[in-house]
Length: 335
Image 1: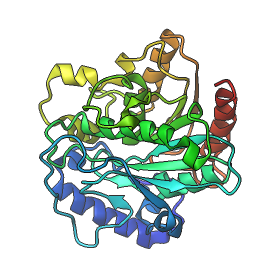
Image 2: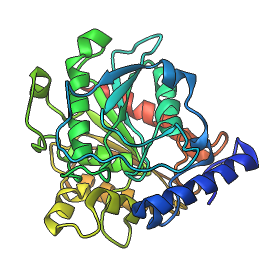
Image 3: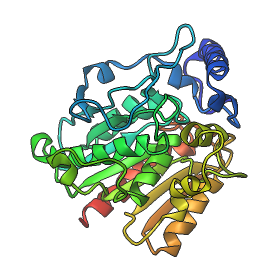
């Protein structure tokens, strides 16, 4: 499957195919996916910007929950696809000219890995050039043995927003101007956050946890939203919930069913030809937002596939970052 312009040539496609085949053999969730959630650029090595970025641990000591078990990795596993996360962190990308606002980025990866390349560092560097202090979340993965697998990513997302708000004076932005941006499964995590920010998924442990976990605004880029057929991404749903989930847990982690008046303004992007996560995911979320009278904006592009990150140069889908910045600037100016 071609998901964006191949800037790395046939070699990148060959490496991608081999990697996905190896990963699918080790992770049943990935094997059940409708289509791969990886673009050719996703196999690029971690950028120097990522390596230089400050690492900010989410938790003092061990994170909530228990049961982590390291997962085997295929040979030549790409550094940019992070797995076996025991110590979740934020990677901080600081702008040269701060605009007083912060953005939490949640990369995708089918809840099976965290894409630190084009959906992590690439997006962070782009938004930092616009003045945002950007934090990329490396969150724990539900299928790595955690007892409450369906809560673990949300624990990290709630803690991340609280920590970003608590460190506002240190990094130089307003705690009222913190937004989130999620991609694919990271889009599901961002949608879960904005619809369940007040859900108690872990025991408060310090002053940071006195902060409100709800951001001021959210961007959901080709997000997984529904966890049930016919429009879910089966690999993401299975990775998050397990193979035979309790219906009550499915309901709790279905953000389109939990939108309320407290859900922040939301921006949605999807390609109509997405073969992995159907565009109906964004349409379902848009309908729920409008029904709850939550301000929302959506852009559906004719082409783009899945996992296109910032978009292929010259393609209409590459316009979404500029559209998002305009929308976000307008929304945050109201806070």
